[in-house]
Image (cartoon, rainbow, N blue to C red; front, top):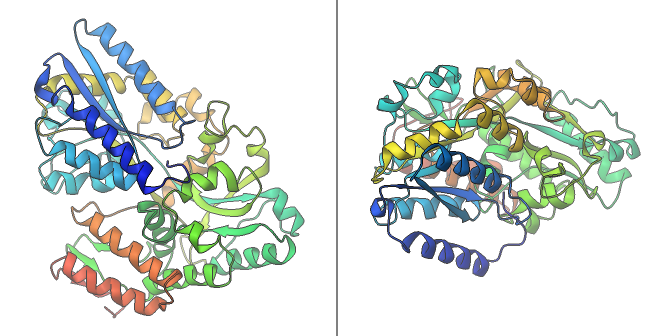
Length: 460
């Protein structure tokens, strides 16, 4: 997760430095005994649990495979910039890494672009694959039926709230809103009774990228309509759903939050690194009362995290995100996750697969889900006592899996996500009505989907 502030100049320097790292010494084919591993490093320099974990697995691998080496290629950038850099690297055999850490929401677009290699020949012989739950397997499967990545965890999302601020506002410590209106009412009460505190953060706008779209908009959208939510995509018809009433209502909620000044200043909300600000400043410093956010936040406040905060488990409560009007099933969550994928231009795919196997030993899989605050995607890991007792709140967030939704796994989803971010920003910062912003989304969607759209709620 990125750190605030990151100026364009600093980001450009970071990417330039990474480019130099990956271009010097040739591409994946330059040394048949070395596996090159590209992954996203947090832009918060205090957070190095991923670096430390991979360094340990590298040691294990090199000890178990004499003469073989692992070259770790950290890319320190915000998620969108990380994806862009990795895609640039994978275009040429000279710069392509062997192994790439891939967000599931981008994996199909990278498959379509020809950047990734199918893994079925390895998975068919790998007994550990039977331990992975079906939903996780599906997240890394392409439209051609082949699997292109090995997932290492998932996540869920809900409401975090500060019980001390709630007490000052006269709100209950066991707060569990039943609909959107109860969230807004709590935020309004906090604004009135606890001045100087931001009542509610819901991510919005283009700059935070998928942080806004998935953790903000889609958490709202999938809580509208009847059971199952209002979808973005109709898999049966293989068509995208235009922005109907649910879409406009989700934008309307955001409009209310920011027009009533229940959220952060819009300049802060549109900072691409606002996610880092939430966990590193606003929540631990008692500046934010309610955050619609992810299951992983607690990792940042552990002794080994970037912002140690011993009191967090007592100060913060968690509540499920309710559906719009409390309609069945009453709760909503979104889930994503990351996978390890082999570059199509890798000259060392067998060695890259052996490194995946090392990453996914039972002990390493348990350790990773603990240090990265992941929700387990393997049955054996989910039952491990070290995992089940690893983090306050892990039982709560694991319990949200039954209410969760996954983003459409089509190649054009990243473009759809960008269009949603623009609609969010227009509705919250640009003075555009939610209905007009939804119409603007529709116009973009029809172009992105090449006309393969279906109307939502009789509209579109």
